Image (tube, rainbow, N blue to C red):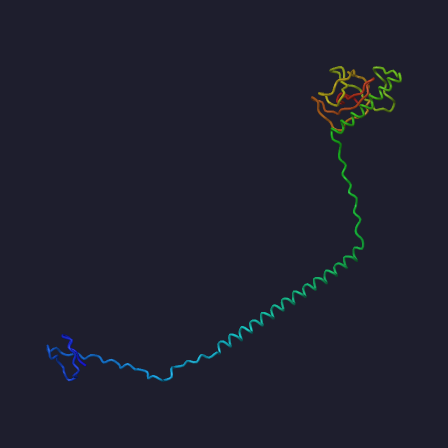
Length: 231
């Protein structure tokens, strides 16, 4: 089949070479392949799919499940054996320790440390002794025993001599305190007095350092600062 490229006239005569209308050279048209029509009644194409992959997957899944089960059983068995071994070791250790320590040790008594007396405790003790001395002096007064202004201390009693040349006397106070203690008497310089007890702690008054001591002077009992005493 041929066709005129100018007027598009188609000719089926294969012997023609030029268009009958305008004389143009005819061009040969390409031929189309015939369409094949499948006859009715023929069997369609069948594709058979084999089941080999399904069975292989099933076998693999079955094998993996069996392996996991074996692992779980092994882990449980190991844990059980470990618990049994720990229990046996505990029983053995318990009996061994019982044989080595047949009796519980006797607890040693707790000794509380001795506390040193505080200044307040010292003052309380001296005040108590002062009260006892004052009661003793009152009893002596009631019994008619005369006391001189410069009594002679009893033999064996600790004594001290007043050494206060500046003032000429040493104050006898009601409390072991230069500020709050009331002055009961003036003990003349050079007088020998009887010492009953002294505080352990030293204090500083002015430029002097010493202790407060409980003393007896005549019919009085009180405190003096031993920085002005000669032992």
